[in-house]
Image 1 (spheres, rainbow, N blue to C red):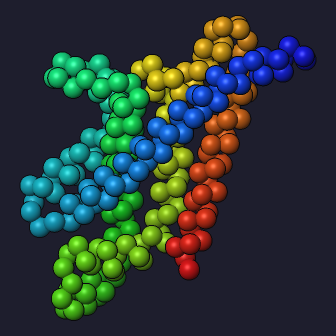
Image 2 (cartoon, rainbow, N blue to C red; image 1 turned 120 degrees about the horizontal axis):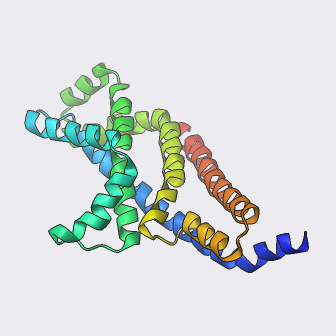
Length: 216
């Protein structure tokens, strides 16, 4: 039992460093995904058909592509076309642009939930397309899309474990190092499970706070 806890204490800095890396990569990726997803959802409603088709193609391809394949293309295939990014940068952009397709669908469903009468009234009042999105659509749809967006961020956190395959020193990668150096199995994976749970729980609590704010 003493050795059991001694290993946790000895490798706590390594595990916490991995947790911190996972947290900041997921935070940046989530912000990128939300912004890019909103842009895609807006472009998906423009009158120019070729642009809409391009947006839909991007969304469908990303939703049908395993995230690990996309990361491999960016990390290992990027240098062949002059795109040289370190593993952490690939993690942020890979997760972010991958998640953007899912966030775009969440925003699209939110836009469609707004009654058409309100949109027509806003146009009659002289509001432009961007003004309608900002003043009419977004305030109302935030109440509806906050839960699925938080759920998507939680999925993003758990999917970030695949970054260990491209050598990002995040939580799963550091857990593997813990296992390889000690030949222990239970302690490393129990510690990783607890840390992932804490991170996911923090995101869930943040989501509840945001949901309460947008409702009032």
